[in-house]
Length: 512
Figure 1 (cartoon, helix red, strand yellow):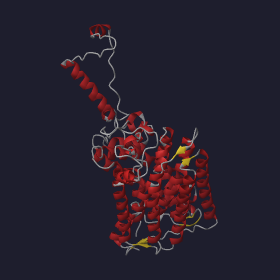
Figure 2 (cartoon, rainbow, N blue to C red; figure 1 turned 180 degrees about the vertical axis):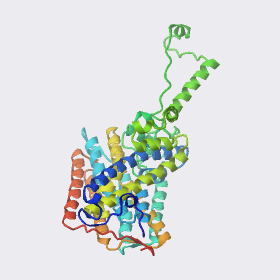
Figure 3 (cartoon, rainbow, N blue to C red; figure 1 turned 90 degrees about the vertical axis):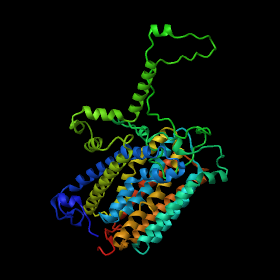
Figure 4 (cartoon, helix red, strand yellow; figure 1 turned 90 degrees about the horizontal axis):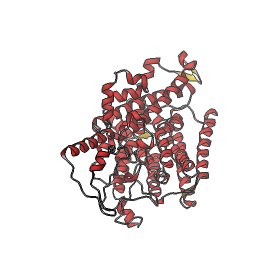
């Protein structure tokens, strides 16, 4: 399939015969550092647009939807958490055709299990061990194991047909059905009682508050678990649960309370006095006072919903944001509607920019890898995978500091289920329908080697946590981060030794 590279149009087509041995002078003399710097900027841009715009817009759309929180977590929340991965694999299959998308999915899984969980343990376990809920971790591991087996079987013949992608999508539909019945299963297993309402989507702090947004754009809370694993997990022991019959939606911590008016001596003198121990008398509000209170309440709601941004945009010069903000952030501020007011339009616009950033990220990664003779699969494993998981890492640290690290760890594997079954299944299904089987000639062994790394770290993590009686310690967190460092530098050494050959043969049907 023909590839469409923006960098080839701007800087010229990149053709390299060896390490820093390319046809263009810019690629021979330091151009790779420019591409890598731009790649890092794309990672930051992806994290920003997902946290600031895409997740809040999806949250606003689903705010009044009466569905199971567990099913919501496995569908819409999963999309908000893995939008960058899904866009990247679609583009790597249909536009910039190579194996970087597969490497990104597998590398993101390794990164999440080792580094994100390890960092959570280091942050959250300074004063004591962290008790992990076994059920959501074991549940998602079972589906994750099925997803990895399906991936290995499908790529064994180095060709993926459309119906194989459909099988992966149907497997994820089965996962969603299980999540729809998750609460009944937990009741049957006597993990919760019928009167208890236990769902992460009801108790988690908003991502926007956890990540500490800038004062210029204080949005209402996005998904309770937007950058959490797909599939809402359960509450850690000791957490506060909503009482039966209470509202499922929490009050937004970003919504400011109506400020109290100053009390003058005249107003205090006119207030009715009550006896000690008696209830204060109910004084009906005058129409003027009621109107004032309503106006104050509306002002507070407007502030929480981000309406002040609209006023700020109207009062600023059109070029002012470009001098005071990140250029892309200023562009999004000027073009993406406020998610809380225009959630559908905002989600479409944000998804468009996610796709644009993902495209540039893949294009920059392909070019830098070609110059350094690093295969796209390896770039996906150890560059794109961690880069697209940057927002998840920041969020994991934020929730660990807030004391919710147990829920973060318990739901670690859920995002991997979505990434493999949908993040790869959907592009392969669409690519197979559009142009025939997607082929990965000569790359089966490399795929299986990467899959073996993912399976080993996932299974080892589960065995270790269960042996520790489902407790995460500070030393375990440090060890997991050290293991990731060993994997990273070990594969770098293998690359230098010629173990990872530069194979970039991906075809699709008749377009070869």
